[in-house]
Every structure is written in structure tokens, then in C-alpha cells.
Image (tube, rainbow, N blue to C red; front, side, top):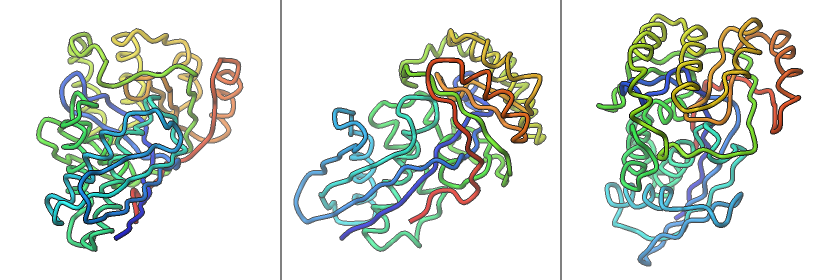
Length: 282
């Protein structure tokens, strides 16, 4: 029994670490998962892009799906990704989403589970293996559903969802940052700003919301605000993505090109993409 699926990366409108409310948007960079189920015990995961990377998340995703919708099958899961790992671009959420959908497909039950509920399975797996603080339903829902979402991560509740058509510029430094290692207490100190960002996001003011979020969380997490300041005069919105280190900006291509010239002077990779409104697919 085999199944495959793909899921996109995402950028941040509002980091949920401060209050539990989060917002994210899918971008057109993908991760692919292939699942092969057998009658044997045990699940073995492989991450093609980093053979030494931890595979507990994707293995747990397969386990949860086979426990709920199958007969506890074993097998293998392999992911291959264009999303930089541990960069703030939701590679873990994309991996969980693609793995859940691929496993559902392998069991021939993908049509029986809504995409939102499939995302919740991945969120539970992420909590089980400790790769997330909030559960990251904001990131998971954006990657699974496409477009932009606003969520209550304390209840895994979808508060808002809509399609958006944005050009996106991403700067990804060479260093990595892991969400589970973020300083939650410092992030909670900026809760008043996060509440303001949530209000703007719920009113559809995503660009302004991103920028306020970016400045606040860069300060809380110890990142330089300089890349954001370089972009602010030219874009609709710019933010630290997740817990970093990547920074994303949205706007029209011509204005983003001006920012690209500045960011390209920095160490790391600067690249263009767009929002993605389809979400994860089998």
C-alpha cells in the first residue's frame, strides 16, 4: 500500500508563541512525502535532504493515521523537500501534512478526512514528539489549506481562512533555529503587541500585521531588525518568519526587487516565490 503527497511551506503573519493565536500564509515551495505500508511492525523514516535529521515527527504521523484508520500497519516514510530545514518556513508542518495525507492515501481513506482534520493529526504528532511549543496549527493549517489562515492554537480552531495573491521575497540566512528551543517567556512578554497583530489579521490587514509581528518577535527572539527596516519603506508587509531565522516580505514584484538588491548583500539565500492557495495535495 503506497501513497504520496506534497505540502507547501509557509510564512508568518503572527507568531502564536505570545498568546496562542497565530496566522500564516502558504508559499509556493514544496515538500514531498512517500509512504509505503506493510504488515510488518515498526515505521522507518528517511529525510532525503538530511539523512542525519530527526525522523520522529514523520514516523509518528504514520503511526497516528494507521492507528485511527488502519490496522496499525508498519512501513516506511520518505520526505524530499525544497524547503530549508529549521529556517522558520514551516518545514515541520509541511512534513507532517504531506506524511499524513500520503498515509491516508495509502489506506485509501483520504476522501473520508477533511484537510483541516488531517492537519490536526499532524499537529498532534508534533506535540507528541516535542517539535512544537504551541502545536503550530497556524502553520499546519496554512500549509494544508493554502492561502492565509488565522487560528487559535490552544484549541486547534480555524478562525479565518482566505486566498491571497502576493509576490513573496524570502531571505534565509545560513544558520538554523528550532521552534522548540525558542524562549517562550520572552515571547509572552510581548503579548499586548501580539493581540494588536491578531486584531489586524482578523480585519484582513495582513501586511501591517506582519510588520508589527516582525519587529516585536525579532526583539523577543534576539534577531537583528535591520532586514525588516531595509524593507519596510518598499513592501506591504515584512516579518521574521516563525522563530527565524528567515525573513519574508510581501508586495508587488517591482518593489520587492529593490529589497532583494539589499538583502542579497547579506550572507545566505535571497529568493522570490508567491503565495500558494491550493494547499497540500495527494
